[in-house]
Length: 331
Image 1 (cartoon, rainbow, N blue to C red):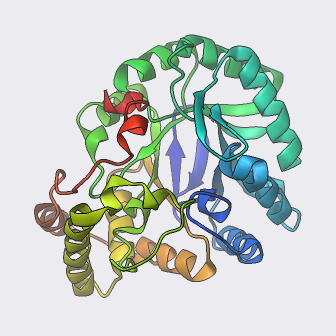
Image 2 (spheres, rainbow, N blue to C red; image 1 turned 90 degrees about the vertical axis):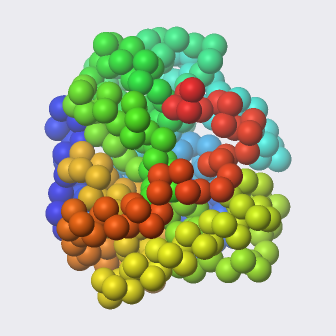
């Protein structure tokens, strides 16, 4: 497994990370036993970065990771945790809380659920509009000083917020959606990260499954599945986006690869400071994703892919409109 370095403060990680959200939340029912087996398989394959959020399954995702790590060495992995998203008992979103006291309380619960004495990367899930980013990052910096956190990350924030955060403490990485059809960060956010020596952990590299080659237009989605409410999965938008997926599948065939592998390989090609997070919930999907590491793309091949699937080709926004309004990265 090739490795990449995120940030200037020395976080080395495998070239692919494992996003664990879907094992507990937002993509419909999942098999916990298979999820644990998938985490084990990822570690055995050399993946070292596990990404979660304390609000995924209301803490269940952290407990799942803790269960998986009972049979593995904690030192073999870096755990990245997002905090701050507020939800009610029905799972509805209520906003964000990134006040310093909330930061420290959230971390205390996370450490307990994960059964560990430190978190490798701790980050606010979104910008709290009521709390200056300097205060949030300052609180995490105090946790770094105390030894409870190793590195500070950000998620879905814009260039100005990145600069303000980095002025308080070194930022290891920005977590943000990045795929062939989600490329908004390339204009300003990604150049800012590179100027400041900040890495990128890219989620949504398969666009929630749209680019996986496994999506069926007739697939029924439960009410708790995020995609049932995502603009890109609705009506004519879905038809248009599945045409893009079909184009990707044709290009993948030329490389003796799957559509998912080509989509991940494209994100891998964006630079040594970009680490794709694959959201595999099953071992077969994980093994498919790992195959992307064998797909080598020349400059001409990359240009052809981007010509076939332009940056603005997707129909529909990444999130429903109310959630788009909370993304500092989209302003």
